Image (cartoon, rainbow, N blue to C red; front, side):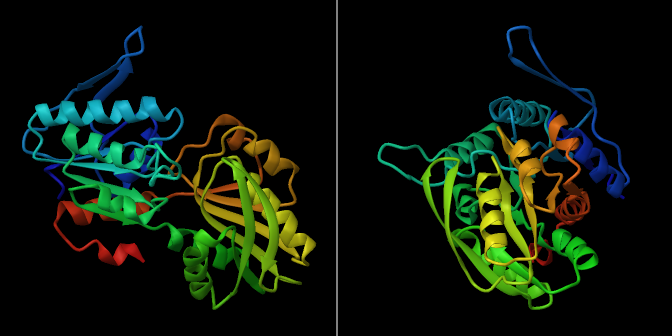
Length: 314
């Protein structure tokens, strides 16, 4: 029994937290997370957490700063309420793309966020598909980086059984695409060679690999404005692909993303619920949502019982 476990949710992850708690056979912790009239975050923990093993679930998605502040205040409230261990469960880690100095005098904001979480009182961090693996080294506390690949793979195997080619939308995602291809019946691998002129804009140059007559499955960790994904789909179809499927873990889907997907020739976009879809995205029939609740609930159960989590990393 999980008598000493408590699971709390921020406003970005109420639904996901409910699914996780259903899997664990417990209820979501009682807390009020709101704002004062001037926008200040207010948190009230409405049950005893003294000596408890506490998990706080919050994706730092849009609006990133508000949800990040909610998470920090919740951690502080739980620490001051004498929780024994506080594990922050961040299915989508905001600011993960700012993981290095990409230009002179630029910040490394992913490291700043790690420092904020640790200073607030987090004892452990659990996330899904961090944009950059080195972010784990930004923390001086244990970090578990889970992968949603098996969730996506299970759906792909059931739905798309014909000859497929797994496509990386850029050179940085080759390792992820190769791993999926190997598990997807040894599917072929292709790479989109693109040149990024400025943030959120990219120009597809050419396709490395044979996609002619095959279903192309583009795999990435996130879809933001969908510009790269749509351009990659066009390039793949122009190079003879029979159909294009896109899949990712984090559906950021900001700005013109949904309009671009609707106008594109992508057959289906497969995502997970690490980020809750906004209303416009929920109305898009091409988007298929898979849940990571089973993966996260199993990880939290193992952390609670001090069991190995490493088998969930593959």
